[in-house]
Image (cartoon, rainbow, N blue to C red; front, side):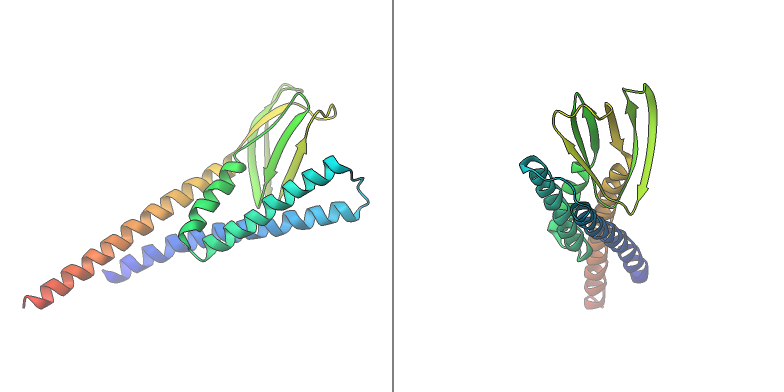
Length: 182
């Protein structure tokens, strides 16, 4: 029976580690993307520089959250949840664009410019697009289904780990009490 507890516990910890690895890879990929863009001779001004700083901070946070989650530290769960919430919605309306993803995305949404439903999938990829007052961008609203799935897995795995740890603790406590009463 003890092996059942440990197997279920290990499986759920491995799910969290996998999410942590995805966040770390996403952060590294995002920083690599920014470095690649700057090496391509991209024009920079104060506005572009600030956008790049926000994107770099986001990807550093992704790496941080991923490392904490991989090590199964309690704060890693919270940071990974925050990271996923940041990636949950993407939009571009009236020239204002917000799109940040780390590690991948599965967007479903509506493109208001073209008037159609869109699906977009990027795995092991990071994207960022932050614009204010840009006239070159289509209007859209997307929901990141991958972020929803990751949030669900974090929540479910965390609850299962806590439940399994409590069952294991009670099992060992009862075993000790039963052995002591004989």
